[in-house]
Length: 426
Image 1 (tube, rainbow, N blue to C red):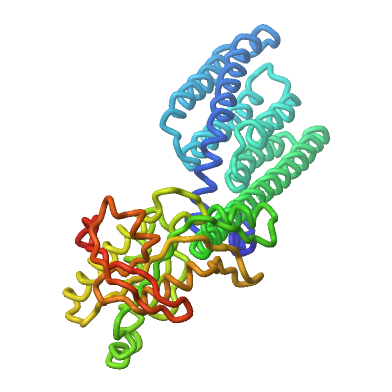
Image 2 (image 1 turned 180 degrees about the vertical axis):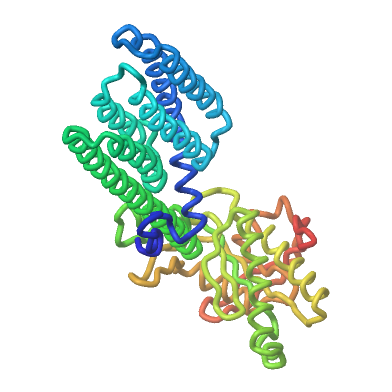
């Protein structure tokens, strides 16, 4: 919390951080304005009451009492009207200091009026001080200035007629004001400490929220949203069987040789541009990216959310990936080509690892899609008959005949003409 509040001035109590100090003053101004207005109205009512009651209760110089009380009542009303302008703490404090200091001096003037018992000056001064400390809530330094003004004035009055009673009253008033000033100092110090602590907690909460959001983004970059929710719900072993899914493997042809000619950073930047574009298009087509391995890219449709149209969406994605690679190749002047293999069938999908999560696929469908990619043609979609039978009504293809796939014997495959691409200039 020291980083938030910092070491404050012992006398002024201000925060060393100007922005924090401004924030504190703004908050105090918002919360203190209603109380200031109430205090000013109370002062107005007291001075009007004094103007009426003092001449009745005491045999005093009515003219002096009326002038002083009416003047202070008018000053308080002017102060109340000025609170509309008092949108800042500084302005509010100026109004409070002016009214409170004037009230103390007015009390001293009244105490010297003919017919007024001078012993009434002490409780009246204390009443004015209470207004400064409790009602108007002057800051410590300004409360010190106001209280010091009328305390010195009271001392001058006592010095003119230093009776033992007057001296005792001066001592008691000074002691009471001293206690009030100490309380004001401690209250402001405590309020500032609470404010700084609250700001510290708020900043910690924001930092925690940002860290949580970052971890959520990172988690969703690694795992599908549905799988991440299951992990957060407490599942520790996730493995699901899907009867129907479409797997796509894409690989950059001759990328190893190209990477040997490029600077390491240029190689990284090229892959980042390509795979970022691949990710955007995979999301657009509603299929799930599984992983990248070097310059290879793997996605699946129908997992983890089962669907019936995944073959068409994966094939459409394949066409977009081919178009995108052609665009990047033309833009950079590099010999880039993509080879793609697609197969439809059952798969097992699940999460492996405890510290570095990975969502992966297993099964013969995955192996066949990988073989179709490796036996494919650059710039074309090489699909199995299982996939072709599901998209033949929406795309065209050329039969490639029986192709020998390592570990799977011969299989009828097709080269699909690129579907109408939804790619953009990006």
